[in-house]
Image (spheres, rainbow, N blue to C red):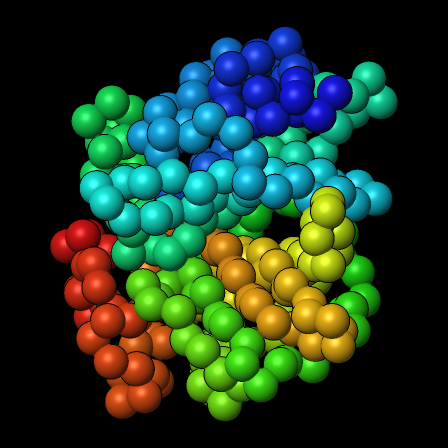
Length: 267
């Protein structure tokens, strides 16, 4: 079942998807509906990222997930797919998150060549409110303390921030931008001392969706934070606001890729 689950998320096994499965891609806002359209969209992402297997599998009471890592133009990009299954074990709904977004911009450039419909970034006039993942909110989980040498893999930075002080500053800036976190789920990472929190924030009136994977050390402190976000247009606004808060603390190696000061239409 695990192999079939991964193959379905890679667009290799449409039979693992429910007939009316829906998919929220990382780059665009509307959900894609239907076994064939969803499988083809998943396959397009897998093709661009060069994904062959999952790096990690996540499990929860309502959601399961898989982490995929790819090389795009010499840069590492990652996507995290969360899936809800029906009683028969078929995937009924998928929500995909990405990181880091300066390199997800490269994914977007490659997708434009094969599936331009998967790269349309218009936000529209109404605030973006997602349909999933999950069906409701949960209480905020207890988050362990940060280790002194914690490594922070941001969804919008191209270098790893190392150390408790700078990580806390980044997290504080993020909370300032997207407000109170609304948690949707907590998952465990198989074969690792790690857990993942699925939550939403609000940026410029739109919902920013995030998944944070916390890997613990032997002292039950957070040794690594790896955060994924979606969708692209709202993450671009998030990155721009975070740049204004952190540009004096983080050097140019953290801001590679599209200029964070440019509008999404210029990217």
